[in-house]
Amino acid sequence: MRAAVITEPGGPEVFQVQEVPDPTPGPDEVLVAVKASALNRADLMQRRGRYNGPPGTRNDIPGLEMAGVVESVGERVVQWRPGDRVMALLGGMGYASKVAVHERMLMPVPPNLSFEEAASIPETFLTAYDALFLQCGLSMGESVLIHAAGSGVGTAGIQMAAAQGCRIFGTAGSQEKLDGAVELGMDIGINYREQDFAEVVQEQTGGGGVDVILDVIGAPYWDQNIASLAVKGRMVIVGSMGGGTVEKMAIGGLMQKRATVRGTLLRARPLEEKATLVQSFVHQVLPFFADETVRPVVDRVFPLEQTSEAHALMESNANFGKIVLKIDD
Ligand SMILES: NC(=O)c1ccc[n+]([C@@H]2O[C@H](COP(=O)([O-])OP(=O)(O)OC[C@H]3O[C@@H](n4cnc5c(N)ncnc54)[C@H](OP(=O)(O)O)[C@@H]3O)[C@@H](O)[C@H]2O)c1
Image (tube, rainbow, N blue to C red; front, side, top):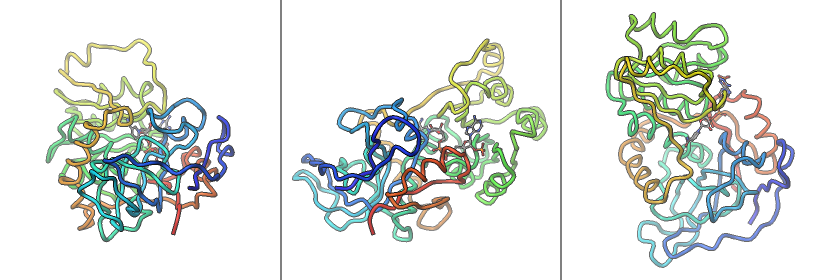
């Protein structure tokens, strides 16, 4: 099969498309001919040699999600047949023309979506769904603050929160991204380069704060995040793009607010936990794609041969939504 391979740890230029051995599916696995994959922030770290995949994956082939067509099924597979259009979260190796996936990890591609659109769903929508709804219990009518509103995770979270009738605050570094996020259902956009988001949240909530925060920035936002939480507020930390070490953390605010802070990672979870999440998503969220209440947000599609250009785009922070790799027609 073809794959975009990291030839050595380094910058975006290190990718090369090479012929590599096909995966060998087990009895519970499905062999998928991959049509499209998509980039995630973790891929940038993997490319630099700082984030290895779980056992069974090659560290030199990143890729946490894909969409494609079932080519063959293992002897114990019951849910899928050759020809089915599927998409899935992967432990790695999605930048390749074939993947082997456990049958319980596969989801059907909604008929109204292309493979490029479908490939941009699994990692960011599952992450945001799990973080907001399963971990923080975000419910109808509550308020939520979503950082990096123009990111893959942010654009997914905003749409699902909007579908629940939540009041949505979001931060981003440009007016263009904030405008795009408003189109997806965000109510109040805050340009973090120009405004203190905690002040805006306080003003707009009459000092009450937000019920839930989805954070991907980490350390530099800690104090402002705690200041923005409502009493009994819940915050989930999904990324640490701004830094991972909080100096002089003040615990008093957390106690006064009886707030909950949790962290989460998808990739390292055992198969059973991921499969349970996937099944919940299929029932609770997938129908919203069919009626277009939520939609994949694709910034740009690159052919596999231009994986380096795709990585350079993500590293420049210019993308709104997902960057997709088209692998086969
Ligand atoms: N825990 C998990 O399982 C899991 C799963 C998926 C993703 N994640 C994490 O979620 C985060 C978002 O991933 P993604 O793939 O959705 O990202 P993405 O589409 O590449 O978007 C990232 C955006 O965040 C903003 N940003 C970057 N560094 C920043 C900083 N220091 N301060 C403020 N804003 C910054 C930039 O937009 P602006 O123009 O607004 O600055 C950038 O375009 C990453 O941290 C990723 O590792 C975690």
